[in-house]
Image 1 (tube, rainbow, N blue to C red):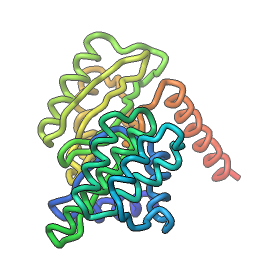
Image 2: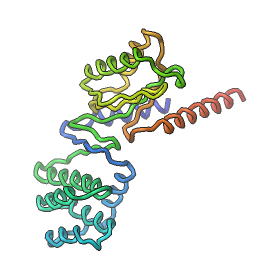
Image 3: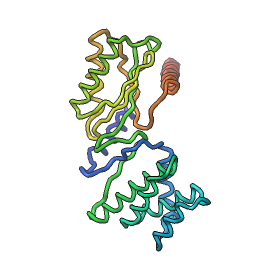
Image 4: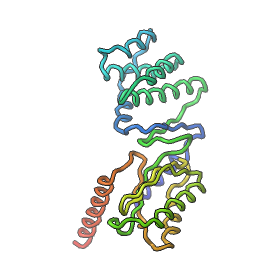
Length: 252
């Protein structure tokens, strides 16, 4: 019951979003995103900038640490000046690794602040680990064979891909990739944020199972990161252990 209430709260929050929300497109580690947001809360990283040219020069200094550059980018992103936005853009074009992803987050914040200032209305920005496009969120899904040690047949693989694409398109979704490893079908897809994601899976699995009842009804889905086989198996083992513990508790 608690899970259903949480899902309802999430759905209610999504439905209340304005039409002009924006979504982070790039796939950026959630922990790095949280670190960025913590930086923005620190008042020492929100000091006003008097000389933008000097700050840009500091960003390229070889002796400057990544930590110092992160703080400068956050300071720039907090200004409602086009000049600050352009500086971040130029830095991102040559940045690599963590600093490139940090620059992407800074650009998003800078763009929001500029739009809020120009349009005189609050902007809503949504970010996930897997990113998205337009008003669609990217998800990673794992579909499970009834026996995860048994490989999907070629017919089952084709059926899964064809039917999944069909049901996604009906809801304006888009399948980006689908891979099969033993009894696991792992996909990456885009889906409109405001559409009900749960509805398509029930119908999709029912349709596939008309041809042999080979898919489990349960699926693993996340918008945080792409999972590898070890992580998927670990999740299933943990879920099985929790179910066993729960059954033992009920018997006691």
